[in-house]
Image (cartoon, rainbow, N blue to C red; front, side):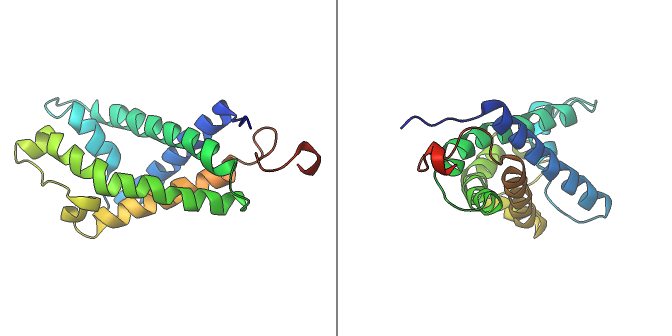
Length: 169
């Protein structure tokens, strides 16, 4: 069967999910909670030597782009396949990018990050464990917020799930 994915709606859901994550992180940082700041980590990987604040818009755009890409994957493999309520689909899906980020992406980013290589910041480690409890907590909380946003936003985007006919949609 051909799957129909509403790409624009999936991308919007992914961008808004990543943005919701960023809002939660900014609030927690303002409250002095020692949570990992993935936007800063991404942005300073590009602009580590710049005295300007270019790291923030760069990191934010990177994070929103990653959220959009994962949302397309979600729309294709989860929304169209699982007979669960969308909010539970989003939460279940969030486990996948959380594991990939925690086990692969964050440690690899650490090995490439100019500030880590220069000894200015510690290597984050698996699930950013070297940043204290706020590292793993931030990774998990961020992905929960992202998954909830996907489940709330990407609801009945187009057509019907693959395993249902038009008569049952």
